[in-house]
Image (cartoon, rainbow, N blue to C red; front, side):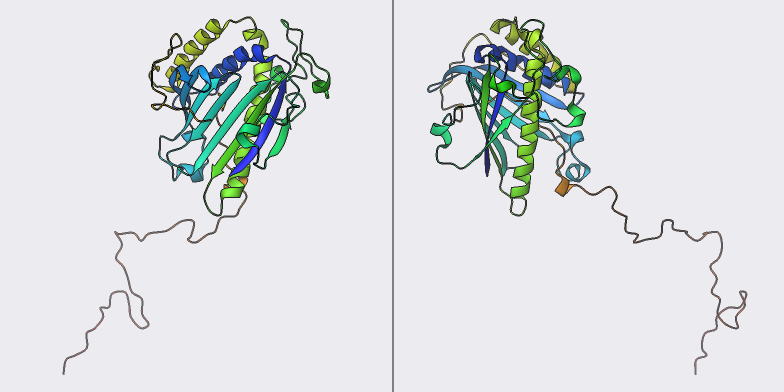
Length: 332
């Protein structure tokens, strides 16, 4: 098990981001989905927890098969997906990722949002007070993202919001910018397979970090699209986008309810003690990838020439012509 705490500051307030994170997740999922691949919404409905109160429960399937490296496609089922379950009691949320094909693999994320610049060092004392963990700050303006995900229109150093006047963030912006909020994320990765555990857990944390950086950059870069929305409007956008996304990947729309809280006993679907999130990246870890420039071993000739069946096979022995027939020894 590898535990890390991520802190991501945003030039927003916690109240503003309540709308922004819902908008970002729906739009990002739709953009990343294609026929047979992407994020299928299985469930999205109100949920009540005795401790956390009213919230929203979502269950999604993230289909990954064609994005897996060839070594993984050879061993996983043709229809391969990761299950995401999220309980959103904003400003506290919970997300879990599991995979039936890899029962010893899981990701658990607890998220809390506060109006500060990441200065609360005791925010997870009740969840992980005595657990050793690394604290990682993520800067949406200055941290580098993988080149394939970079868009200038989503770069906070270049983007400036017309509706809020915020943007074009520079190094050190977190020290003086107002307003400012922080997403605190406690991320636990488990891959309990001897010989691979440490390397895989470290790799997954690298992927999680990239996802958090990209998602929070997008949430701010799209602020003019969602800033004037009400909660009812963003829920309607979420519903319509999820149906469009499910159709895009070729599944039937789920039953999405946003109007009432189902009267289910807490024992039926008790929430664990994390946040709606963006789809997982599926790049293979380098230590499991086959080097492209590795020379191939030649265990057989490049081509194999078979004899012509129309020609008679001949046996050339010393002193024997092709017309001669072998003699049998005379019996005594």
